[in-house]
Length: 153
Image (cartoon, rainbow, N blue to C red):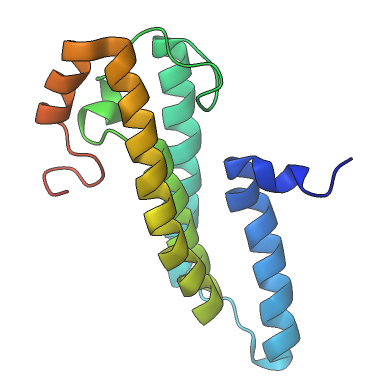
């Protein structure tokens, strides 16, 4: 197995690799002072479930596969996709925020901040592809539904 392969999958990286490595680093740095804070746990759960459930919903209604290697066959605009165009990516960011809070980790907060522009760039590319696939239907959708936060951004 190639060592770089776990880092290729965004979901594996976010929900497995980063938490394990961050916990290890924080334990090495703080040992006895490391205390898990329960107030971050709801964001961990929310972020993961939002990613997982919205992905299953998109695949069921839109066809295609995970990621953009197998693009959707139909545009999904109902369910959570009626409130935010990128619930799966938003789930990643919510999970990373919950991780930083749960571990009270400045490194975790830095990882979250580094991922925000990365996801913004990825969303821009994905939306360009969706515009190419679905044309006017997608443009109408972008006028009605915010990219990230419902009714805000």
